[in-house]
Length: 230
Image 1 (cartoon, rainbow, N blue to C red):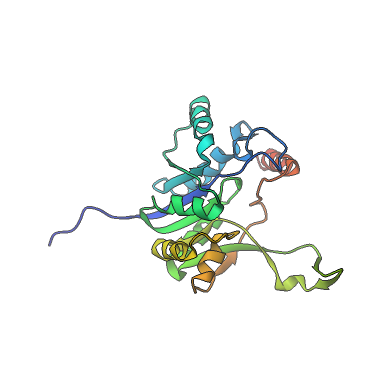
Image 2: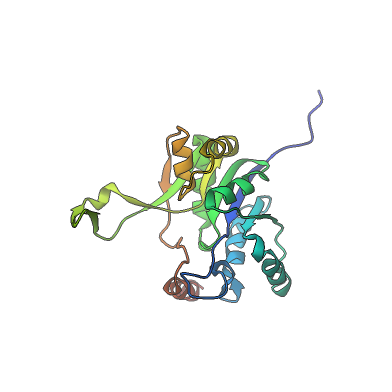
């Protein structure tokens, strides 16, 4: 019997690194800011590589930032293999560009500015997506929530809500088709695209350290976390 020598890689990640420095108040986009001696985006890539060194890593960057990224790779002698593709005019377009390069059964889609994903969370997300079609990590809401409507507001039961994190993982063929269906509509995350295509969402436990670095205080928290973790 003849067996094909080509086996699809089991896991890929599309890392969306399309941010600017606007909310961070810096000229340098937040994914390139240095954190503990290494740009944030490199910390993020390292986490996926440490979890699975055969993983296909795809980084989606704004076209105008590709040269800066290549300069940083040289400066920090960064050697983890990854593909680079151009971001689009929206997050949806950027993810589509990344998905076009995927050659695996399961794809994670991750924010480039979440550098603290734990190995156990990655394992949970990828394995659950392989079994259930998708896996979306969430954490409970610890603050009181008020719903605002018209000119008033009311308290709502926070136990009925959760905060959504990344990586959001999917069986590749399903998420590709969901994005094709999405057209040019804008979505804030991949689970929304998947749900709109008619799939139910499988939630898994996220982890509180998996913060998204968006404003200067996040960078400070991240530095403190690394300092006390080591």
